[in-house]
Image 1 (cartoon, rainbow, N blue to C red):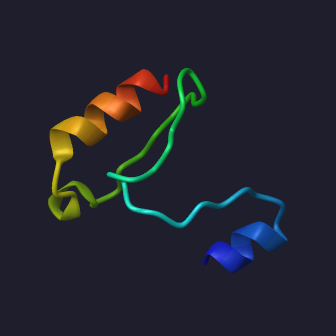
Image 2 (cartoon, rainbow, N blue to C red):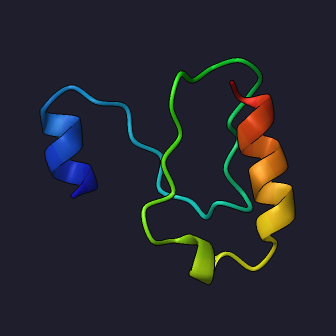
Length: 53
């Protein structure tokens, strides 16, 4: 899927939610589609996602 997205002009980083660098105020929307059950440190990931807005 990442290769298809890149071919369509998107920037793709393959990483875990815990290791992802979301930056500060970089996104309008972050979607966790069914993944919270797979994230080991859910609280820190949600804090990181909140800071990225």
